[in-house]
Length: 187
Image (cartoon, rainbow, N blue to C red; front, side, top):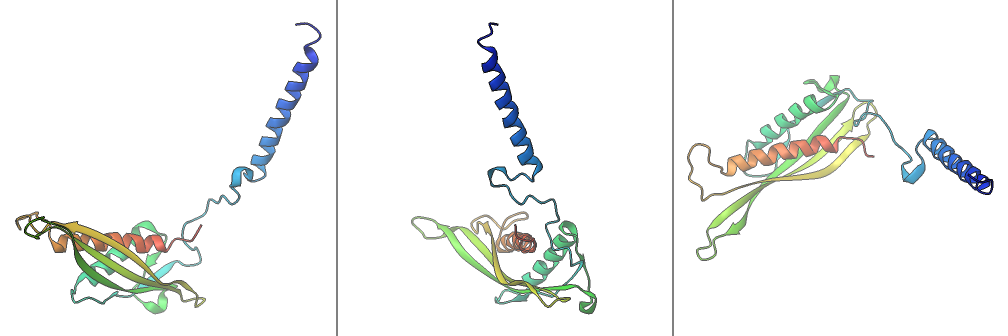
């Protein structure tokens, strides 16, 4: 190397070191680079609550029985996927989860010439409220979640065939999943 290139090499090395030092300082300062300002490694659910009393969900439809399946599915998902414990005594609970559900059925597709339904859909709409009994704060105030399941009424009704009850069970389980997701703290 000749002596004329040494100042250039030193300048590049000095600037490269400065760039790396700036990036390292930015990362150590809390990852403020690129808009990532509030990275947290905390629990997804409010941690001031440890127990939940789940009231039986009301049904606003003429089809009965699905409210029991919804309440049961929500309880099972809460126990399995959250830090909360389900309690049967409202006085011993930190919070209360309640709501109403409606179940609907509609046609997704019809046969072209005869007009017979080829595929039907069952939709469950759930309105949920969640109240912190310690503070009186409404954590969820009548928010709605929807879920659906489809079936084909043209299939023979043999063992394993899909019908309204199958689609309703699928929709109820999906709605229970969405209710538990709704209980997560907002980002």
